[in-house]
Image (cartoon, rainbow, N blue to C red; front, side, top):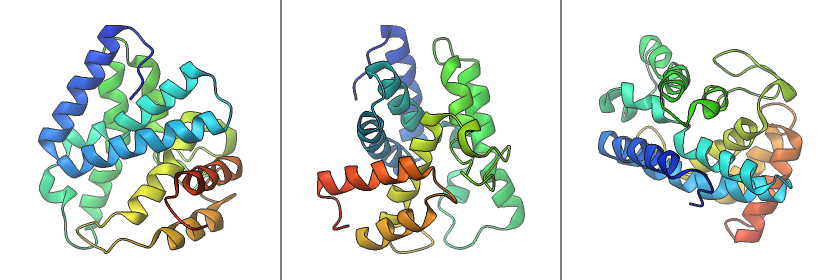
Length: 196
């Protein structure tokens, strides 16, 4: 991960990433895969190096609020009960609150909160839509969905990369910023992650 920022910011990110790994290693692994993919998409969209680094950091930290969720819920083998689902959805808010209180990471808090918003306004926690969603959050949301689809979860098997790409394409303009979805598919193709 490229961290072109002050050393204390790098240390704060490392501490939070380490805590997340201790709490739930699959979530930490997912966040690090997402960081690489999100940075590639950011660069493909022409973001400057600082913006690309901030997008990468948002990806690393997008699930930091899951530190407050018991691993038993994170590893739940089937559909979540309504109370569990509501608890899970709060992780973006709790991630925002944690970052807002962490020196040097405050500016990342709003984007972390918005990583589960959807282009058409159907996401959470605030129902933001379109360009009201920070660009870094739009990038991370698309990369997050792709990685989640191609990774086995306790409640379902992984999808093929081809099927995940088909779903990203189908979600462009609905769940995903169309420009971001196009850039993600191009990045996936360039990396040889899928035949699209």
